[in-house]
Length: 244
Length: 249
Image 1 (spheres, one colour):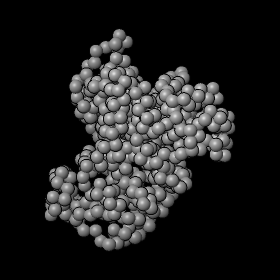
Image 2 (cartoon, one colour; image 1 turned 180 degrees about the horizontal axis):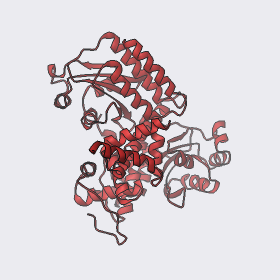
Image 3 (spheres, chains in turn cyan, brown; image 1 turned 60 degrees about the horizontal axis):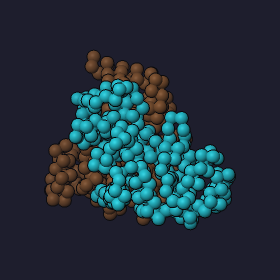
């Protein structure tokens, strides 16, 4: 099982950043994703402490409308994916079962020219920070291959967003891209760090990655040290500490 | 004897398919039972991540060496060949054919395993993953054992896909993603408990599992509660810390 799929999707994202002449950001993921799927719209919305669903990046004509509808109506596939922490695939917004699931949203979305939506949570175990929504003007169900690609776009959005939380000025080469989900030690270490610094898992994951970055080591190596208890992270100071 | 043990296990697994189903609990039980039924030394289940890797979701023991062996199979080995071909792949003695999987065989032998057998988790034309069985001594599987092992792999498939009616490949992809993410959540919970109770992650897993069983809860729900309500599960942490004290004393 080669890592081809991951490399290919990240290649698309990097190519977009280069073409725009900008560092990789959540917008880059959004645009690269829209191109890859020929989508009518792509939205990335985050779930924050006080706001359940906050669109932070959108591209395509239908994206703002889709987000507005969900914010206004309080229902829709993005909100469902956030609540259930699961992928939500809606091949036909005009179908009876879709209309009965979201009685106000579904007809309004169809009226706005959206016929199908695929939503992927930005998810890593219990870490759930938002959703990636891909909409099309026609009825369609993504193939398993497309779903695989979309999951990597969602991973990319999660990695970029959690990195931004620690270093807003970071450029593309600063990020440690990879298949974070592959190594059990990374998730174990995330849980351990959460207890060490008395924070939630998202914060712990950010700290772990920041530590690896600053130390110039791989995330997996750092995670192994945490699990072996040769490395502990201390609670973050308020004054923007230097990393240990 | 094989059939009697197997029948028992199938009944047990069928029970777990009904109420309060948890995919991780289910696959974990299946891996543990596989060791008993087939008289092997270790068993594990790997699933095809829709992102394109083969990832371990359950193992009969949380021994690091075993987990590493499964991780290695992302690149080569019996589970990978089995996943790619959709058919059973067996090797009775890894030392007789070292060129077949040079890195995997070397690692397996170093870790004390001589025989490996892998059976596919199949749904019609799609392969979801594989169940791998390891023996310390060289071993040929009998035809009966092979038949039953494939039946067990089929039960695993049913379990993974349990929650929804299956019409589409897309739904299978989603279920695989869900199962793999549940495993990630469990690893996070293991780490959190290990740190709070000052035990290692393997012990943390044992405590979580026992707690879930004693309280008739699913492993995932206990793991989620531990993560969500960090101040809440004091009894679980006390049990875990008790384990550390008992073992050191």
